[in-house]
Structures are given as C-alpha cells and as structure tokens.
Image: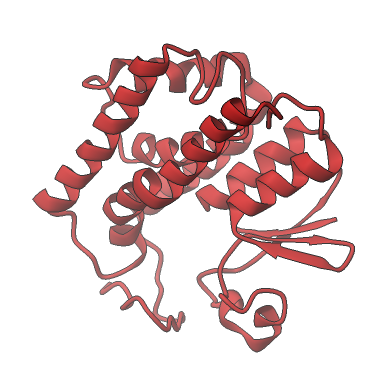
Length: 229
C-alpha cells in the first residue's frame, strides 16, 4: 500500500493518523506540491482531480481523504470502533467528516493556508467565517456532550478535525472563546501522543511557512494565483 501525500497537508495527515491507528503498513510517497508534481499528467493517471492525498492499495487508486478513511476501516478493520457499524453512530461520524470537509476545514484553509501559499489576504470576512465554523463545532460538542467529536471514544471523524485545527495552532490563533473545542483538541494530544506526533510535524511546517512563506515562483497552478513574493 502507498499513500501519496504532502507532509504538511491536513487531509494527508488525517489519513496517516488513521493508518497508524489501524496499524496498517504503508509506504509514504511525498508529492512535491510546490514543484507542481500533482499537476503532471503522470499524477493525473492516479487522480484526475490532481489533488492530494491518493491511496494506492495494490493498484486500486482512491482519492478524497474522507473516502480513504472509510475504505481503510471497511476493508481492513471492519470491527474497529473508529468507524462504528451502528447506523446512528456511523451517521454522526459521517456527519462530522462532511462537516469538516464542507464547512470547518474550508474556512480554516481559506484563512490560514491560502494566504501562506497563494495571493490571498486575511480579511475580516474570512475571520468571521472562521469564527462561525468554530462556533458551530462548539455547538456540536455541547449538544453531544461527548469526549470526542462524534462519540465518547476516538473515531475517524477526529482525525481531519484535528488536522484542520492544528492549522490554527500554527498561526497562534486562540481557541479560548471555544472551550469545548479547545478541551477536545488538548485531550486528543494528551491521550494519543503517537498520533499527535504525525500532526505536530505538519503543524510545525505550517508555522515555519507562516514566518517564512515559500518561494512559489517555480510553481504553476491552474486555479490559484501564485503568492506575490
């Protein structure tokens, strides 16, 4: 099994956490994002979307980190509580996964990552959207009353939510206004240090890029304008 990933990419980090938690051996293939390796025709053969990560399970290629997380559990650890079988419990996990993808990480990415790697600015509107997503996450944690994002135990829903939240830590964004989110995040670090070590490495890279933005003059991107250095 191979995982084509980026060392500081939250979706890649989430899949790496799952692979470790599920104890599935794999080879990590680093994709040079700044060099545009994901934009090549060769890469498009395994993912026409030209996005990262991509799982190669003996010639079965699967993109989209949520789909990868679900596939790994279904195929290799079907009895793991990381992805519960009970319909309601699984529905909550699926909800949190989609909440992160469509709402939570989306606002974080535009506020944290886009200004680092592309010609975007951090704006009051971007900050408002970010705080709205945090408020919603705080509400979900309050209503569920659970220790983790989808249950009283760790599930695959926690991995992408953690790797999204670490982007905020990378720019020293305070979670003090969101005590339940803050406690959930701190608890994950404390109880799963081996998994957090994966995320921490990516977080430190993002923090370094925040201080010293990468030179993307060599990068060609079909959608986003390059950062003006």
